[in-house]
Length: 324
Image 1: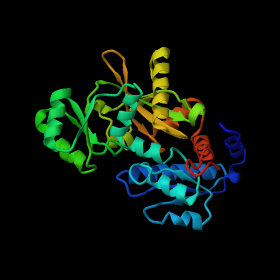
Image 2: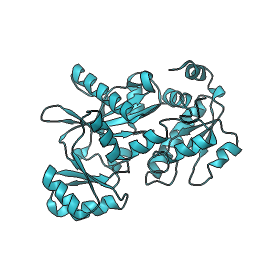
Image 3: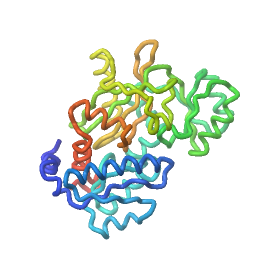
Image 4: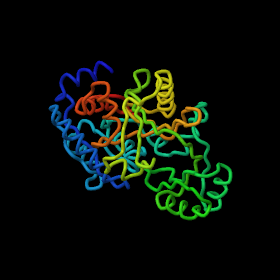
């Protein structure tokens, strides 16, 4: 943590007028509203002059016109997590939370994320990019079934199909294609679902405790993520200490390889047959709802939801135009 961030934690009012950006136009609008509502209340409880701001309902230029000094991005998905709003805030000169334009854009695109990880020698399931049903069928023949089929640039398992038979190729492709022209076909790794929150930038970045997600029937879909109470979360995950450390280090390397800053979350699958971890994706603007995982990991190290929100806000910066 920098000296400036530490000063803000001691005097939250010095953060100035803060916009909490949530809502937006993506398929994850509903979840973003839940995240932003929680963040807004948390910041206000710590004495921050925080205000709700929905980019779907207001022009971003209002941020400059109304004197906002920084922005907490609680947007998820397109137009909030993909580098677009980050670029607008750079142009407006308003420091913001999380990763910059390039890392946000890459993190939102699962195909490019995996390509970068592969160049760094980081393990990720084999994949193919499909623009037609025949390519989905070809990928299934190569990788075997089951196979994961999903939009390359969506989150919260929106548009996801676990393809278990060859005759699902058409439906799986069409479901994913509704959300993105690029359809990702990914080798399905049978294993334990893990997620690792990372806080910080560069040499200050560090992983929080590993969380294991145990969803009903192994199906961690949109409903089980945000609206069901029978999904179990084990934090810290019940793993040998050395393996937990290996997964945390892998996740930190994955985060830094993409160029992430401020905070984020890396999803990992631990293959059941040999306990080998594989990277699935990185989230540069993770959920902050009552069911969300970054706050859960923070609580495991004694950090309250309110303190977590304040720390993330204190790290807000401009990445292109110079930090302030």
